[in-house]
Image (cartoon, rainbow, N blue to C red; front, side, top):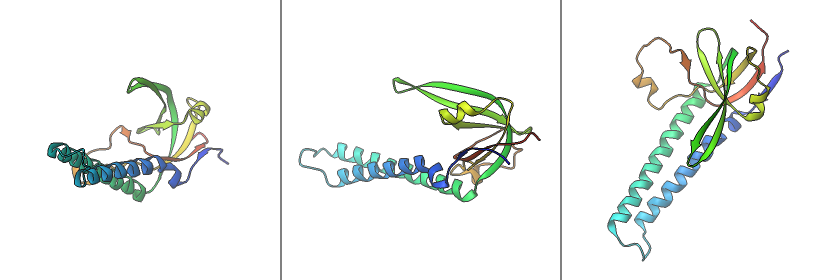
Length: 170
């Protein structure tokens, strides 16, 4: 029997995106409301139009993220059995402070998959060991319309992880 290292419901896997969508809609609606019903201190038309445009852009972005998240959820989860090739602790600049991402590069023999993990799960993962990852693949907004019948790439985009299990060697 395979040992489960991580398990999450689809709701938990998409929680971050759901909060982002709610925030974008809230900010967009507040900006639109401020542009339509200005207070007495803000009478400049340019400022109202700019605020309205920013609100519209936020609402449009929230709508696009909602559609892509819904498409990812509808496409269903995918399970792959992979071997961990490399573990990396990636640091980057986040608006003046340093952010750290914990990623593992894996392969199933044909394709490479890169999974972003939490620090505690990343610490348990071992290089050259086999794992079974269940995740929701990312479905871009216009993926069906923009991609032609090309051969599969070497890397597959991974999305929200719902389960990680230790797997037996093939």
